[in-house]
Structures are given as structure tokens and as C-alpha cells.
Image (cartoon, rainbow, N blue to C red; front, side, top):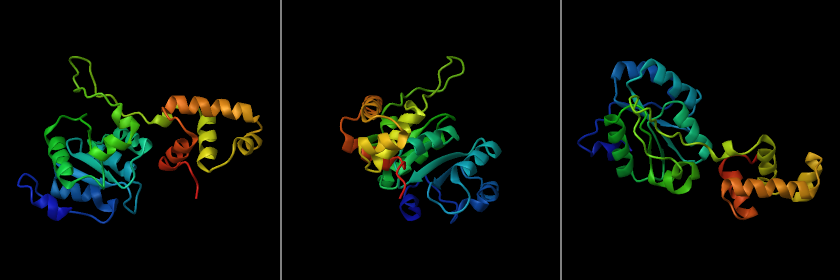
Length: 211
């Protein structure tokens, strides 16, 4: 990534770290305009680190990279003040364009890569609006699809993701199979998912399934 981004005359790659342990010290030393953070980096929890980065260096923009495109991760990135979210499978040209847009934009702009937009329902639902105190308009946060579900519905979805039948789920929750069917129907309606197989895939993608 460093080599590819270095080919862009408008981007100067000033430094890199194997984990976020010394991130704040390096940001203070190097004074970058934009920081890219790998969600899967080892070491301290990356979203907590990003939140500390935002509080200490409010003028520094940061963008997340991840191998996983999940509503929940996208929502977490926005909540901690990120300027964007890209999948590792996105073209580096798109990432470069996102970095430059983040650097030039006002705080509140949220840039998303093509794969994020294509795979994540929450990303597709985001309205593009400029943050304006005078007009009282703010960017719409990418809300996780899971936020639409009740705690019981998330529990049912987790069991569905683990491949359990309606009868098995009913026994575990002390509910009838008909009640489980009702939960499943509401979950599918809220998520815009039409088949049980797609519900299983969604639960796996969102990390609800325990190995």
C-alpha cells in the first residue's frame, strides 16, 4: 500500500506502525493530515485508540481499513469520529481518492469505499449531506442494521446463524416454534432479507456466530 500510494504525487507517506501502541506519540511527532487504521491491527483496541486520537488531535482525519465489511464495524467507525471506511479489497486508487477527500473535507465527512457501499446495507442507506451548523444539517450516521432489532431478535438471529432449527431455538428460549417463526419473520422484514439462508449469512458476516 505504501508503494502504491507513493505513486500519487499528492500523497506523502510519512510513517507506519505495526500496531497502534505508539500511535499518539507518532502523530504528535509526524503531524500527518490523515491516518489510516487497520481494524485488525494487533495491540490496543483500535476504536478506543481512534477515539483518543480524535480527542487529542481534532484536526487529524483518520480512515479505517478492514478485511470485514460489517454494519456494526461501520457504525463503530463513524461513532468514534472517523472520516471514512474502506475494505482491504478496494482498489488502492479508490483509497487514495478517499484519503485526499478526507484531507480536504470538513470534519463530519464520511467517505466509503466501493466494496463497503456494495456489501453493507447501512452504507447504502447513508444520505450525503454536508455538516452545517448554520442550516442545522448534519451527516446522517451509518446506523447498523442490528440497531433495528430487539435483544430477543438478535438472540434468535444468533441461533439461526449457528444453524439451529426453529424447534431447537424454541426449546432453548422456552418458546414455541410458532413464536420463533414470528421473531424470524420480523427480523427478515427489518433487515430486508427474504430467506433463512440469507439470514444465516448475515449473522455470520456480522460476527454473531461463535466458532
